[in-house]
Picture 1 (spheres, one colour):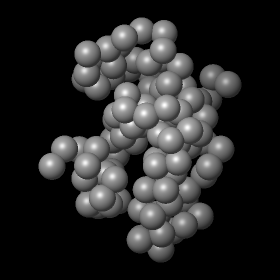
Picture 2: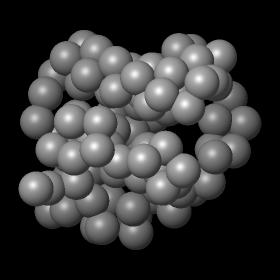
Picture 3: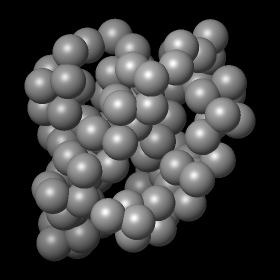
Length: 102
C-alpha cells in the first residue's frame, strides 16, 4: 500500500504524521487531483485524524488551505519527478513556519 493510500484510508497514526508527511500528502493529492478535490480529501482525512485523538480543535481549515495552496503554487511553477525532488527544491516548505512570510 502506498503512502497516499495509507493516508486516505486513515492508516497513519497521528503521532507518526510529521510536518513533512503533511506536505507529502498534499503534494501527492495535488499531483492526482484538481485543487478542490485534493483540498476536500486532505481536509477530510486531517479532520478524522484529529478527531481520532480527541483533538478536533487541532485542525485549522485556513492554515490547511493556505499551506495546500502554497504547495500547489510551487508545483505549478516547477515540475518535479517525485515528492523527494519537490521537497529538495522547496526546503522552506518542510518547516511549519513557511506561512509566516505572509
